[in-house]
Image (cartoon, rainbow, N blue to C red; front, side):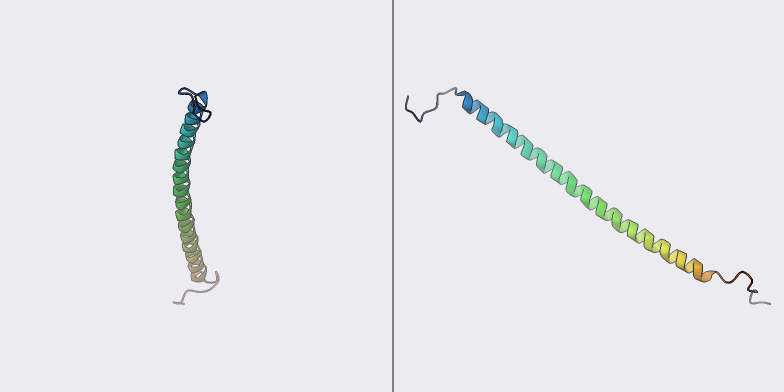
Length: 79
């Protein structure tokens, strides 16, 4: 056997193959988790926008109700 040749059933080869398999599995898992995180981020952004819209609508309604109220002791216009 030449010094650079690897024996046919070298334990290093099987360990390397196992490590490569683990890295491939972890990369696939990382990609899946990244997709989930990206989707959740988009959902959070949509909820934040909706919350801002609701807050604006509530503020507008509140402002219009405050403007509609007259003084309590003011007589109606028909008096």
